[in-house]
Length: 508
Image (cartoon, rainbow, N blue to C red; front, side):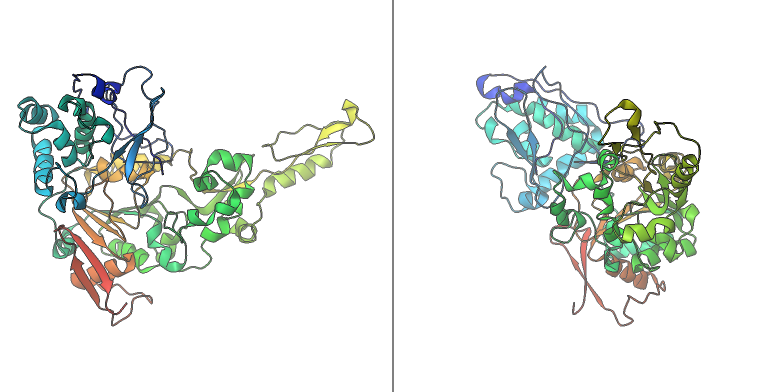
C-alpha cells in the first residue's frame, strides 16, 4: 500500500547531477500532543517533520497515513514534477542482524548510534558523526532504519544528508526503551508493584468473543468489505460517507455489535486491576462497550472512539440508549429518530398550505405531482433524522474527556502503561505512549509486535493467554470460563530480542 511520510529536500533527489548538498536538521516535535486532532489513520505516530523542501518539490503529506501493515515495506515519496516516484524502504532490525544489507550498520552498531543520539541530542550527534566524518551519512541512515535509495546510488555522501535528517529526527522523537525492563519476570514485578496503571486497549481483546478486529488479513472486518464497492474499506467509518449514505455503515454494523453480555479474560484482567486498586484508566479504542460487561466502572473508562451504548439523532440531536436501536441494527436497517417522527406527525395535523418546507439532512426525496408541474404543487416531504451510534468516525474529534484526562490527570500519576490488542494505527489514541513521561515503563501485549513505537517488554501471543499467564505468575486469581483450569503456557524468547517473548498454550 502506498504511504506518504515526511519530505526531504529536492536537492537530495538531484544529487546525482550535483556535487553538493547541505544537511538541515529538523526540530524534534515538542509541546503537547494535539490530542484534539480528528481521528485519522497514521503512518508513524510520532513523526511529523519536513526538511526544507524546495518550492514545488513535493506535496504535503496526506493527513491519513498507514504503516506497519503486514504488506507495507517502505515509504513512498511522490514529486510534483515529472520525476518518477521514488520509494524509500524501511529496514528492520532483523535485516541488520542477519547482515542482509551490504554496507549497512550491524545491529549492534545501530543500537549504539540510537542510544548515543538520545544521550547527547541531535546537534551534538551530527557534530560527532557527520561533521567529524567518523561514519558516512549513507551508512548512518541504515542505523535508523532507512535503506539507502537506489536513485542515490553513486551520489556523493552529502546527498544523503536530507534523508538522514529525517531519520535522525524520527528516531529522536521516539520514546527510547528503558533498558532495565526485559523479562517476563520484570513484567510480573511491574504488575505487582505498580499502583496507577494505564491500560490502552484495541480490538484484539474482543476477538476471542467472535467480534472481528479491523485489519487482520482474511478475518478482519476491512478484508470483508469489498462487496460495498468502496475505494477504501475505512470509508465505512468516514463521517462524510455516513452523512451521504448511512446505509453503508448500517449494512455492516451488525457484525461489530455485541449481542451478549459477555466479556473476554482480558476484559476480566482489566477488572482485576480495578479490584486491586491499580487501574488508573482504561483508554479503550473499542466501540463494543464490553468493558461494562466485565464490571469496569464508568469512571475508570475513557471510550476514545465512543461506543454503541448511546445514539444521537443527526437532525434534532435527540439521544437514546443504544438498546433502543439494536433491533434495527441487527436487521441491517437504518434506525430513525422517534422524536423527529413524533414532531412530523404533529406537524401533519396542522392546517397545511400547498407547499410544506422542512429542513432535512438530505435523506428526503422531493415529490412532484406528475399531472401538474406548477411550483404550487411541488413540496418537500419531511423525514426523521438518522440515529447515529455515538461512536467516533474518521474525521470527527475525540471526546473532550480524552485529552483532558490524559494530559491534566493521568500523565503525572501513571507508573505503568500496558497496551493490549492494538497495532496503534489510529491517531490521536496511537500517540498516547509517546505523550506519557519516558521514565514510565510500558508493556505491549498483542499477537505481533509494532516497530513505530518502542516498548520496554513485548509479550506476544493471544491476549487472553498472555494476561492469564501473567496473573498466574503474579499469584493473582483471574477467574473466567474461557481459561482452562489446567492450562499450561510455554514462553519462548525471540532470538535477538532480550525483551520480546512469545506465549503459546501447550498442545495448542
